[in-house]
Image (tube, rainbow, N blue to C red; front, top):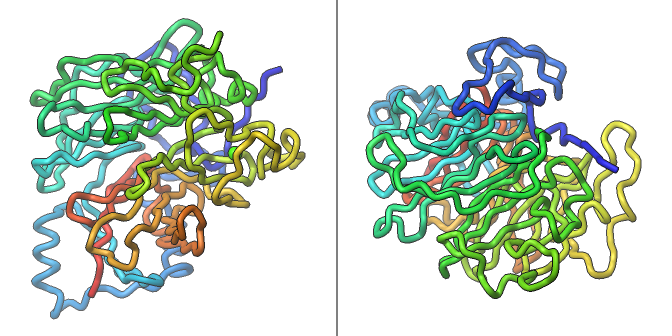
Length: 437
Ligand SMILES: [Ca+2]
């Protein structure tokens, strides 16, 4: 029995299967019907609904022309592509939303290089460099292994090794071709100019299929020599419960790709030893808790039932046996209900779905009232969600910048303590949130 489900918020684009396995093939960018919202989007420019969204959901004040002129000029010098920054009021902080980079096509992830530049992935298969002045380098990085841009798959996460300044390793996740189709993989390499060198493929999920759904994937280092990679069920629900299948799990490896001997399923007959968890549907956000050092993730539920979980060795997170969501369209129950002995309960559930993507604990100093909060991006309703935590309990949720910038795919706290967001749009942007005193 094969289930092929798609989360209506997870991908705006219809599934696109290339005629061949193409590396870095740009996706078509002409006018296209949006299958989720039934609207036609223009080829260029901001979708119209954003403007009405701005006035509906947030209070905007334009920076006063005289008093703020010096600051504005400085900001525009730093960010040549920036539109007029907008000031947003929120519960704990007021902040400006400053557009730093434009012209990205369905960007997925970003990483900060120590020299002030940034790396940005575009799902179609391009790794881009953003200069210190936030200018997008027109020349993508060459030398990445073959990437299949298909449906939700393509070039996905990018992350620096915690000792990057010593070893130069850059990690990325992507959709890799292989027997039977394609699936999520992770590689690392060293950047020399515009070329990735010393490339090593550390992991490539099995089995591979031709589905366009649910690739995960986020890369998180635990600071103790291990790296986690989050996966999805590849649109085939029962795979998430199979130990002999990588789908629907968190993968844990040494940072050089070897399987740690203390992984929970090592030595179990038939089990994939890279697996750290099972029963996960599609995790597009993950972050290490700054105090406990544990891996927190969120995952897309089906229709309703997005979750936040703490990933623990060998645990079963329930999908598709238990869920808070229902089947698309027909609304029927999935599996056996919402709880079962031996299966983990989420810390937090979103019903209806927000389609979460990207996640960061706020650890900086620039937004002191957000310290320790969990920031989650949302594709649906195009918002940033702030969760206040008491240990593993979510005590308050705030939804911000709804509809202001687009579908939020990634959330990062920069080395400067500011919050960076990236939008998965055909005209995607990187914005920075800057507190207003
Ligand atoms: Ca679950």
